[in-house]
Length: 319
Image (cartoon, rainbow, N blue to C red):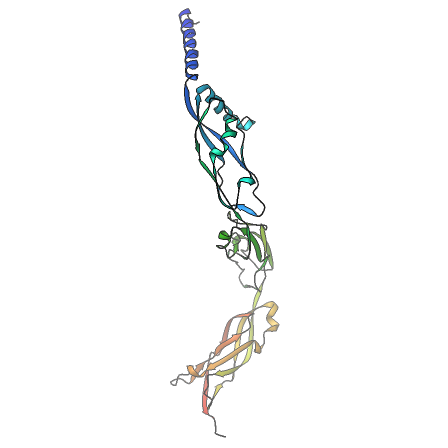
């Protein structure tokens, strides 16, 4: 149980604290209050080009008890007791860079403050809002990532992207920097392709532009490969002088290649053009290389049997 002397001490301590608070509250000080800024919708066909200032910080001076009320008001802003929002509307915004002095809102601010409160400064002292006319540009979609096929399978045809072009919107300056719109990496979506595969692939976002599509459809066609052997393909010649004749022995060679099973029956001797080049004949050798001049796109890994053939060069008889 507390003694009488302790109770007396606590009483006078409480009185002293109250008197000190009354004295302190009558003194003046400075504090910073935050006023939220609301940007009304900009004119149709325009866009903002930078991060907008979310609040206006105002340094004010007054008695401490008044400043305490202001801070309490900000603390309970989430309950709807904060300061009224400053509104920047269409009427204040023109195309290009807009510089709005914070002092323009002084009268509106004073309506929320006590009559004796003095506004000392603003931060920022100028609010910058840049708006520019929206331009449109059509760019191709670029798939990012590698297509990994199962062993003994090949990709048939081109990768189909739908849509393969996208309209993007932004300022003329930003659009000039963009030549294509990339997808997010799609490696994990095409890891073991062995049949026709369709996946929806998200497009990579860009804070400086906008576009309507979130994803594009990507189709990869694949099929198993098999070996094709053609026993006899004619050998032609090239770069032979007009007064000379070049003959090869044999006149045909065998061709072995890989081809997708759907095209196996389509590969014939006419799918290949083979030749020996007169300019590459070595006088010290009796044989010359047979070259694959061209072949159909459906085949790959082409080998010849034999790769070297014998030859005879004869002068044409005069008529």
